[in-house]
Length: 178
Image 1 (cartoon, one colour):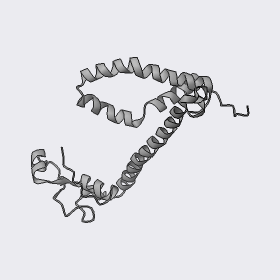
Image 2 (spheres, one colour; image 1 turned 135 degrees about the vertical axis):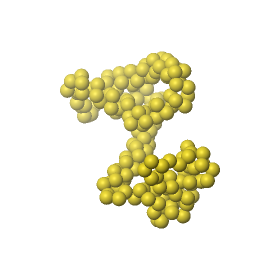
Image 3 (cartoon, helix red, strand yellow; image 1 turned 90 degrees about the vertical axis):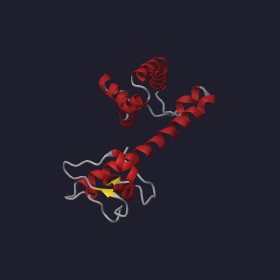
Image 4 (cartoon, helix red, strand yellow; image 1 turned 60 degrees about the vertical axis):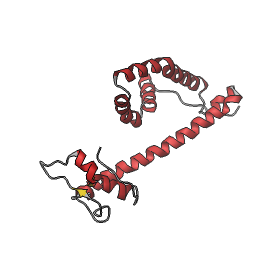
């Protein structure tokens, strides 16, 4: 058969760092503390570790071994079991969808990084083009706004208003401090 030969890893460190980069994404780092807190802390950690050892690690190892052994991509590797060809196609589609999602998150990051280089950041005050028509609160030094008052009176923190109007478009969605 006329197939291209895939390259090999230069050393074990390159292989290990590649695995860590693929398995541990920024989304996992963002969501894990929140998930642990929302689902009971220690009890969640116990269930997480058990499932990681019983399900996650064996599946990860099986996928890794199959990929290393076959030296093929996600779609072609399933030629060994034709009935499972859809698994490879589904893996490729999921990878594309996740890439699109993270590109959106990266675009928000780049937008705010570029805006923060200005001398006066746009979310510093209540600007008319993104929300002065709402009850907008600009934080002063040594002053706080009680969360309960914020919820009941409907104040919007100016950073949230700027985000919803400039980044997400002119939506009618209201953000409350919680």
